[in-house]
Length: 132
Image (cartoon, rainbow, N blue to C red; front, side, top):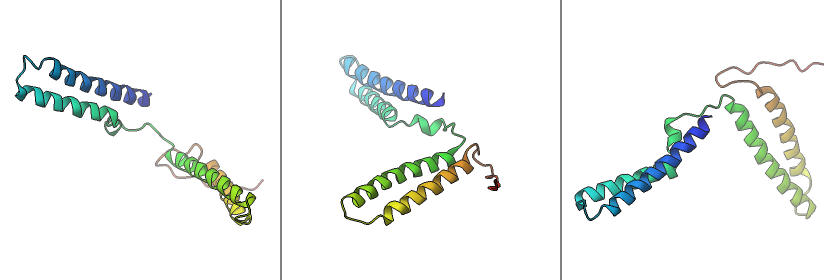
């Protein structure tokens, strides 16, 4: 929910900045340059704040399972590495060692994700008994 709010705030900041700039330009005949320039500057700053997504700095993320997300991102990197190793293996540039090593890292990452699943930030990872 917070993600939608932050996105809407960014869109509104951008729109408000554009409105300030247009107002400064359209009222140029009635406003002095001393009023016009700061007004346009405020518009540019508001627009940039919206474009760069600065509202996320003021409204923190609502993620509670960031360690699992980090490990998931690591898995995506390993998928890319596995593909690269498979291509190198298939073209004869390398043997299968890098492919197998990456595959082993992926297996370890899945095990780590199973340990991190359901563990909120700030809580200790429970020790699981792997005996069957």
